[in-house]
Length: 42
Image 1 (cartoon, rainbow, N blue to C red):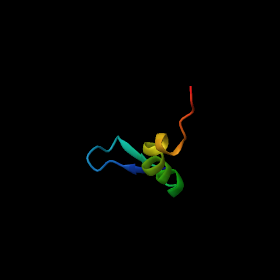
Image 2: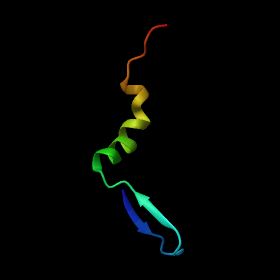
Image 3: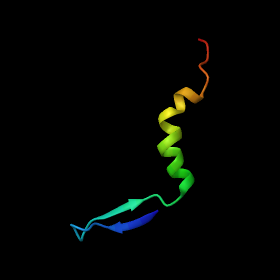
Image 4: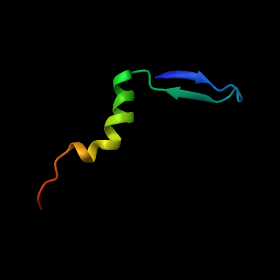
């Protein structure tokens, strides 16, 4: 995690994930997870 101070509000910070693999998972894999897993009968 990286902390970035807000440019407009000094008492507020934004946090950003610094790990590229986690960013890839959230941006690419998670939205398409239903297409990646086979549907089970039942």
